[in-house]
Every structure is written in structure tokens, then in C-alpha cells.
Amino acid sequence: MTDCPYCERSFAEESEIRKHLYEYHESDELGRIDTKRVEQYIDDHDLEESDDDATRAQQDTDEAVGMTAATNRQSDERWELHDVQALSTREITDKLAEHGIDTTEASFRDRAAVVDSAMALVDQWEDDHDVDASGYDQDFIWMAAEVLWSQWAPDVPYRERIYDLVQDGRELREQDDDAEACEQWLSAWEVIVAVTPDDITTIEAADDYLPNVLSLEAFLRSLDNDLATLAADDPTYHDRRLEFCREVCTQFPDAPDEFLLDFRHFVADSLTELGRVTKSRSEFETLIRDYPEDPWAYKKLADSYWREGADEPTAEELERAVKLYEQALNAEGSLEQPATVSDRIGDLERRLADVDTSEAQER
Image (cartoon, rainbow, N blue to C red; front, side):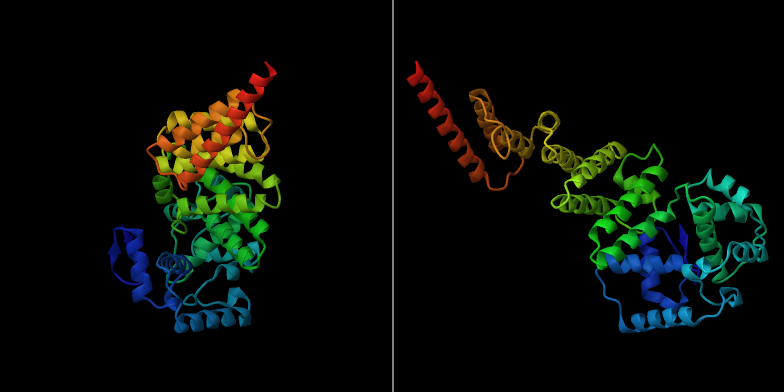
């Protein structure tokens, strides 16, 4: 159950409070956490920001740029993360002390070592101190925890960092810096792995546990696609993609079969691109064993015996490829352009006939 901090309504689902905040509260009323919720609601529903929202956002930016030292803020003024980042560490800790929270680097690191979230650390503060904060100063406390975490415990992953890295990547993508954007998203993936408990083995459970700022499956699929695109120009990304896709399969072994099948194909495809033919064939053989209804593993394994860089195939390999293509056509799953596979069977049968003719002539 989630309570709206601006009215007395409560919501059972995160999606419900996002919709409520978007429909019933002005943007300049929202703290940072709830602004993120509204942004996610807009993204999820492909909504466009209104002119009023854009105007208010610009006003917020202008006010922030023209603002004097953040320490002069009044408690009823909205905090933004850049406001807190502009403060010195001493100014942050002094303001926290004003709200009843005494912290040092040592005590902060001790707390960070046993939680994986700035919000969880703030909950500890509230349990252990007589915290006196209202309005937007509640946002300050959360932001202060995140800023101090980046300064005092940068080596300790925390959940909120995922959002920042994803957003950094989006900004870099808008600047057409796809490679660096991908690096930020890979860093976000590293944090996801670090903070997700071992007993979470499905995408759905991880989505519930991680901050509600992205659809995890969509993020993982998008990152794989980005790695594959970059690899077309820089082959070193084939290795990065291979490592990433293997980690995804290991991290979420109980994900839906469709998801796991796709990512295991990505592993095999990366091995193929890297020229590790024996290992890629082994991956496809394992896929055929685990998903006999999937036609693509049969087709790709057949291709490996005679197409695109394969050594000159033996008659036995050509026969093996024909059998695999036939299995691809007979598998229960759908195969795009089955006529292409049928044509390849015809090509191979003609090659096998030529081999038989040549051997007969030699005899």
C-alpha cells in the first residue's frame, strides 16, 4: 500500500499512484520521487508533455539557475538533486543535523554495507533518530543520502543508482553518442546484478524489487540490441554482448521460456560472430535438446556447416545440414520464409549429387 504524500488517498499498486499523481497533482507540487513516477507514467502511456508542463519545467530550471546558495532555501521550496549536489559535504551533514540526523562517513558506510538502497538507509535514519522534516525537506533527506552515498561509499552499489545510469544513457543517446550510452546501460546492469538478491530468479520478481523506473525486460532486450548494433562496426562488442547475455540467463534462470530462448540464441549468435564455431554449434545443440519445437536452432546449426565462413564441408556435414533443415521445417514453432530453407535443402542435395557423381567417376 502506497500513500499519496499530497492528499489522503492510498494505492495498492505502483501504477495506480503514478496515474493519480499525473492526473490530480501539479508538477510544481511534486517532490523528486513523485516527479519520476509521473515521468514513468508518461513514458509508459506514450503521452506528450503539455505546454503548461513544459512551461513549469522551464520555470523550475530558470529558478534553479538563478538561485542563490542552496543553504538559503526555505523549507517550502522544492529540492532538486542538483541543489543538493551543489552543497559541500559539511553543508549537507549540517542540514541533516537540523532535521535530527547525525551522520559521519564511518557510520554512513556501516549503514550502506547492510542495505542496497538510499531509501532503506533513510528508513534506518528515521528509525534511529527523531527526524523533524516536512514538505520538500523530506525529499532533501532522500537526496542527501544519495549524494553522500556517491561521496562516501561509491564502491557500494545501491538501487537508486540504476535510474541515474539509465537516464545518463538516454541523454547520451540523444547526443548521438551510442557507444557511451551503452556503457552507461551496462553499468546499470552491473548494479542490477549486484543489488538483486540471489533468491530472485525471475524478471517479474526483479521488476517488483528494483526501483519502478524501467521495465526490466524491455531494458534488457534494448541493451542486447544496442550491443549487437555496435558490434557491426566494432567486433569487440560481440564479446561484451556474449558476456551480457550469459549473465542475463544466469541471473534469471526461471524467466519465461520465450525470453530465455531468445537470450540463449543471442549467446550462440555471438559465438558464431566471434568465429567460435565449435562452441556455437554446441550451444545450438543444447537449444535443440531443450527447445525441440524451436525451428531456429536447427536452421542456424545447419547454416554453420556450409555458409558464411564455414570450412569446405564434407559430404557427411552436408547430409547433416539437410537433416537439420528438414527438422526446422517440421518443428512446431513458426519459421519465417520457410521457402528459403526449402531452397537451401535443394542446393545441398544438388551439391551432394555432384559429390556422388565425382566419386563415381574417380572409381
